[in-house]
Length: 299
Length: 266
Image (cartoon, rainbow over all chains, first blue to last red; front, side, top):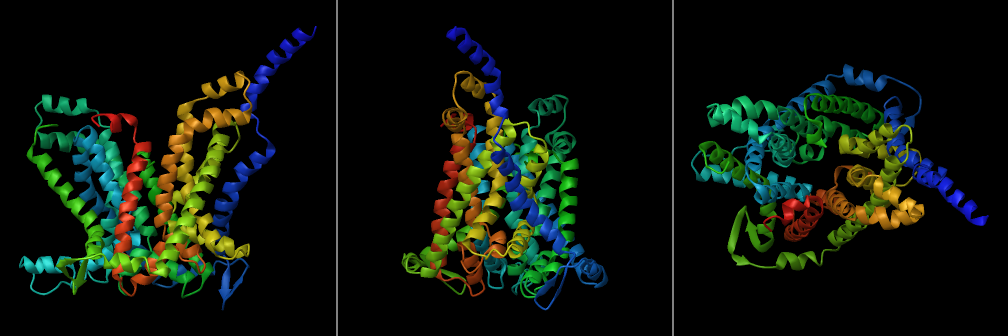
């Protein structure tokens, strides 16, 4: 009598036990939804809310106002700087792709182990101290830096160039050097996905290497290029330390303005409103990137 | 593509050039750590370890290094626990809003660090939570969570449900299944993710500078010192960090790159 009962229980219990995988205690459910909400969503919402508050002295007044946004539009410094910063970051994106595409193409054309070792080497500089890299770049570009002494030694210039010191050009070059690896990666991935037999077919049909590249490889890798561009653009526009370090007084970017509102200017609500604008630009860039680019490249 | 066409050579040369650009800013401080540099001129005749001797006596830097390690290790452990838990929760349970929560987890990684940093800064101020190393740890955890979550989720999806179901069939409890089946299978993904997350945390500057109190991590300390120019011991530190990071990358590569690429021809 006992045995069949036990059997019955076990058989009946089987689906339930399997079901257990999907059945979680409520504490875990609360945590699974709560943790991301408390530490990510709520901070982001409070930051959005702050952009509608206003400040007097050091005190934040918590009543709804659109004054911050009105001020952004009304004063003719914020939107022009945002526009200039967007142009700058687009230039950075274009430059990193001009440098990054050949590298990605070369890496993708290598075989086996060599390819991945070189790819690794390309990514190592990303893990180097970011602050040190900016400092080194600044000292390379500076008046008595390596670049100027090299150019003077080769006789190309007589006097040290100052066009790369403490201005937007310096920011442009520094960001490009810092961000090239981020451009290579998505392009490399899109080139990797390219079926080899398409290249063979193109060669079979009598296309030269250049023709194959222009007519086959380039169009098919464009999604990777777009992904790379949006990737680099987002990283560049969010960077406020590089412009601060190499930009001097004339290299003012939008990120620096935002940061200054939280430091010296001490106007958090206004800074939040500016950041909301920055967010909007970033979201547009990401949407463009994922609409026209390959999503796998970014992920 | 074995033959060397003009195109390949051109691309190869450009690649070499890019590598020089990328590594130039790294080698400058390394060279300066062994040689004396005066007025932008390197004195090659006199290699010494003075910079390293100065480094081990520089308390400010060592404290900052210690803080960085505390933050990095804590953030990685927290991110591993939370990331593993969230990945399992959203992989195994049919909860509504999975996509939305996943999107939220990815936000700090997608948005510029300045946004994440500012959001946390305002949040901490509003809940009256004083800025300290704890806020830095929370900031870093939020930042690296997406990476850890994603790595573990991908591995879980590759693992499939069969093994888990088999384990339950054989009478294992939920905890036993987790400890004996899931965890061992996640090990290499977790190690890889941990190393990458630690590397990210180690160099995180923009979120840290916003959410830190009076405690400095290494990048913040360097940032503060950079205005005055670097002393030789900073160069020594950079060289040491370079060595350490390269080691980490090699170890991470072994865990993250598919086996076929590392074992073949090796």
